[in-house]
Length: 321
Image (cartoon, rainbow, N blue to C red; front, side, top):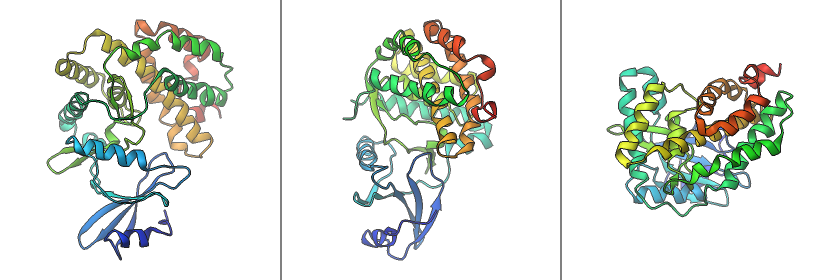
């Protein structure tokens, strides 16, 4: 984690000359993060190098959220040519470790996270691309593109696409809202009086409100108790008036998101050498299997049952060994 060559000059130009530059844990993308520390204050330096990364969507959505009272990082400095952005530092206290270390806080923090989504979904959606059928298909195809070949499974792609086509109408039954897409406990920071700070929203799209609930309640990185999931869905529905169609969309989008994640995690292992992601796949399979049990998912369940037997639903690195 060596800072980019231009980091010192960029920081100096934005009022942070001679700041110490310390690495911060990153994510699964090409983005890297550093903490600039000077005179008892700190900020986060995002290194989003072109052509792999474009920080403009992050900047635009951060400002859109901030203008509406959500806790997104303030932007302190930008150099688009270098792919450098200086943003507000929300610290290191994530919702994930907080609930893992203190079970007594789990319910209240998940309620707070649901309430953020309730507020967000009352806003007119941001000007972002649509989470349309083509995007849903492209993401679901990551499973047949990466997971199936890794295990030597010959997938009938036409049948797979047809199965999804039979259920995707349910993903367009609700209002259109801003979908942050990676809304989960590792991207929610506790700041100040336990305000939830938002991160990793640069890929936002306009789509169904159930998607971010799936991201939160079927978290690929930590186990969410089914009782918590049920209670949080009920809380959201009570606040928004969502009905049974919302439940169907939730499970359809849950199946789609979990299939996508299994494909992405397999790719991160095979292509990028990030083996830790393969080990997360068994949890994601558990969520996916639960979603597939929903009656409206019958066409997709039939494809999975015919193509990927139960004993091949797990850690692809272990199963391929």
